[in-house]
Length: 223
Ligand SMILES: CC(C)(COP(=O)(O)OP(=O)(O)OC[C@H]1O[C@@H](n2cnc3c(N)ncnc32)[C@H](O)[C@@H]1OP(=O)(O)O)[C@@H](O)C(=O)NCCC(=O)NCCS
Image (tube, rainbow, N blue to C red):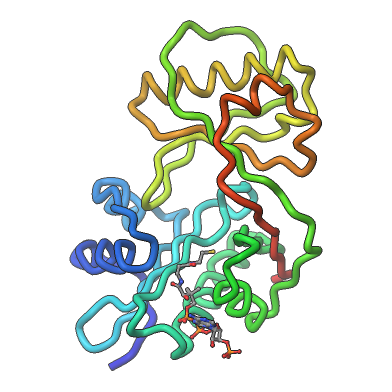
């Protein structure tokens, strides 16, 4: 039997195995359980026999972090699960009034790009660099406008996204990153992340503290 359906609690060990095989990452089981119960989050699994062959997780599509987290275990890849999982999230997204679905895909991830392209997603090929800063405790306060600090819990990552960082002055950039890192240290979270189109707009000292995780493209589709 092959099917795509909303995840249930007993799928969590299978989801963990897929995640380990596809990303070499551990899941956060309590976060996964909360996501299964949350009415605003779609976590769907592909089931082959009695086993979880893949999953897709969609948080809030209007967020940068709302792109689907998608994985299919290696032995089940190339059988159409990826496409069916992506498409399975559209109905609920439309029902909630979302007209756009976006996916952030590494520039060198050809299987994922093909999978999303087959579903009708397109990219403008504009590269975005992903920078991360590890948690760092310290005092941090003051306004960070126009930078937004968005804590996010995905299946493998509890961290924080910084949005609008490149649009801020150097002083605000530093304050925002410092606050983000302090928050993540306090809350026992992972690193803070920012997507930057033009790294020359980031203060050099901040770039030196960051780790560059690679280049990504946005892929979008109108729902
Ligand atoms: C990306 C991924 C989810 C695709 O799942 P899938 O079930 O294999 O996808 P589908 O079967 O629907 O195939 C979609 C397309 O991708 C292609 N594809 C799948 N695996 C591939 C691979 N290893 N290399 C090249 N192309 C691949 C398929 O051939 C198909 O294209 P085609 O019809 O032109 O041949 C899967 O490869 C995966 O889990 N990768 C590791 C995790 C990952 O990168 N997730 C996405 C992060 S954005």
